[in-house]
Image 1: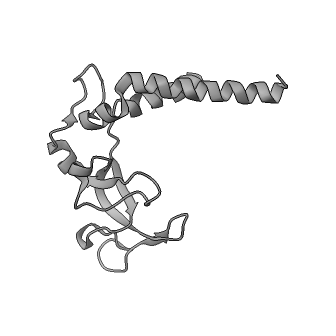
Image 2: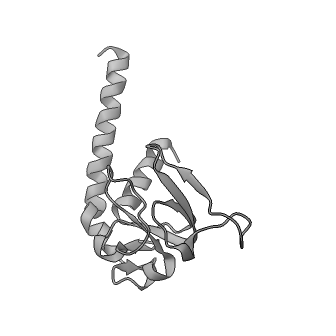
Length: 147
């Protein structure tokens, strides 16, 4: 698979609202019950800073990044204020959400969020996004070639 094929596939999956579960995540304000501790049981929380120097804490447990403001409220914030806000939602909560779709539904082989798919334009949105990426790459290549 070529690089452009992989980029297009990722854009298509992102526009279709593919849900990617992660084992843990850095967030800004996790509840105490989800904080990952050094050594597993007792100890201090694993902390770091983001690119702007804001303190972040590692959360434990499987979860997903959720951009839906209705579904994500009450969970740890994932994105800084400069970006669209997303929440780190536990996987069990995501699977019970009304917008969750299992793999094999809507003609997609992977689990996806119907709300995110609608917001991002689905496959048409992916085609538009890939088209703009390709136009940018072509114009950059033409500049390098002196055209």
